[in-house]
Image (cartoon, rainbow, N blue to C red):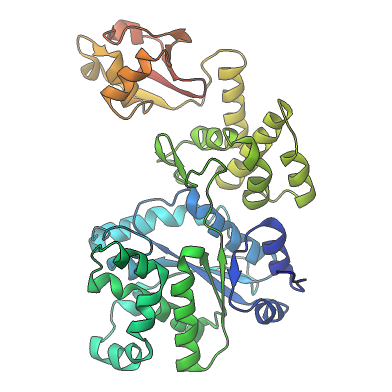
Length: 418
């Protein structure tokens, strides 16, 4: 569509590629001309950290605050007890209250790097937990006051539900309630804090529309929904996944170096798009860097990695990661910031196999994968080809760190503790 936004936030969303759909472009744009409006995104606590797939939503909240408004990060302490069935083939495993609380504690860590919760101004962010209003709901009262506004016929028509039923995969009554609870979140946030906007990935469109309809029916308030595209890389892979699993945002699950390296390995075709979505470089510069070709695009990838890593882990961590990468790739050295596997003398014993070391260091998922890596000449030890899958490493060999490599881009150190 051709729409010329008036508000800074909608302009940023459209120019940088964040916008997939909106319930009312013009109405939301007009509302955001008044500073200090509130918007929220919900994050269910299904793991101890968010991964890169959630970073686009975090950046949207960051831009919302940078353009003068009040972002709300909503922790799903209540909704996690149900589990979002959207576009899933099976039911999520149920977590205990303690597991959910532990996951929320881990997830919270990352937001302070992107969003300011203590500006002292009207755009100071808020972090809330929907368990505050969901945990103590009276079931019969909730059914009478809220449930009566939902049409089961309409709920069954939403793609997230319909796709599950079309495949004849079970959808529990527990999961079916999720969209009602998420809709109720929007109602409560509007009632308590004047929140006018819910944002999320495009897979949340049905849930967002439900919340808007419910709030209009109960409170007769005008509110809005906005979604971002569900990103895949240019080669079709889901954003946030790598050969070794999820790209976590918490540094205790994924080192700043490994995070930096993920962005450095971006495919050429994605560089410009990712610069606009995940950094704050001017759009013109993003387009210029994204248009580079051949060996020149590698410089743009380093800029991308540095900018994204600086936002999450700080400039010092980004500089250290770049220095390590240069040491490893350009000079063939070890580097100070590589992922390190520290073994005790008891772990090594009379010797430990190279296959075990490759698996323990995270360079392969299993012994079978490690052996295949060696057989296909993809493994190195101290930059020399590793050809013997039966090689044993003793404590003496680990008197100084050894460097293991899987292909050209993945490396780890192995050393004795102390």
